[in-house]
Length: 460
Ligand SMILES: Nc1ncnc2c1ncn2[C@@H]1O[C@H](COP(=O)(O)OP(=O)(O)OP(=O)(O)O)[C@@H](O)[C@H]1O
Image (tube, rainbow, N blue to C red):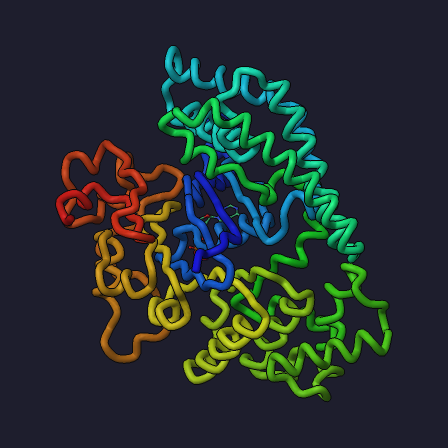
């Protein structure tokens, strides 16, 4: 069965400005917490994220939920389509297609002629991905006003279908709207024939998609979408307001999103239903967080995240603060909820044994970059990056829980001024000359197994 994308991030960067040390310091320095990350998370999977403390795991989780204004790159959400959601930016982009194309051409000539540095290459790549997403194979057209007109028609027809579906319109009405949309799609396909001979056509055309670019949403648009995208934190005690009862804690997002009326019987019934799903007794509803154990408090945190029926949850060290015996209970609960509620998780943990237990795929991060990503069993069976290898070798055979990943010799370099070339070269026992100056590319070595390492060609 083909996997459906839920979230796709491309070349994602999150830089935090560092406070200047004196008035004389001219250059603004940045902590490069996420420094060009590309991954896709599929519907229904658990994507585990591991790496030493400070490598940027939590930052990535928070950027995905747009809790920070990301510095650059794409974060696209496919849980709803632009047709259903109609974000303001999309129609404007389709109107501005010719301008966007001009901008991409300008960036291209800048790279070729004057300024072949990383920033302009990144800006050009971002601009091209943006164009491909908007118009796919029509990017080869030399008549952008015609393309713009046709795509706007298609978008409006698609929105019409989505709206009719939403309000349960009659089958006839829906059929007519779909037929109109299909006819426009056909004209688009026809217009593309002229470009199919281009060797890159198929690849580029496959990038035409209708997911939602999260960083482009207005605050209000993001507020509404937030019900799809939730987070569970490591320390349930500090993330739960001690002055609110369990019932009030779980009701907050529901009332905030106007799903229920405050104090209503329907709200109380619904809260008890959610609590039950999370293994919390109904009579706990009037109790305060301090009256619970750590495991129960984490169940409250899970119930709060679950209340809005989200599609995607970032579990940020969600079991790390719990005793080992309680950890497995909470992990089992998360696993069960994933199946019954059709959830998708990004599961962040410094503990490889926990990540192994729960993840379908695992991404390994080092100093702001993803260095390897593969199916869970492949990471353990055939680690390709020396850093992953070191993490695996460091798992003790007994009591593997709660071990911080501080296993490699040498300090982690500063994320403000990371090593050139491969950032791991200063601690890598296989480092070659090339590793000191050339950034390794992110390459798919075998299906779904990606690595960024110059050794990969020697290992193959
Ligand atoms: N809001 C912020 N402002 C400035 N710097 C930040 C901020 N958040 C994180 N950082 C820095 O970004 C880098 C990555 O931090 P992050 O918390 O994402 O790492 P992590 O892998 O989750 O580690 P840990 O498990 O210790 O939280 C660190 O150097 C951190 O100091």
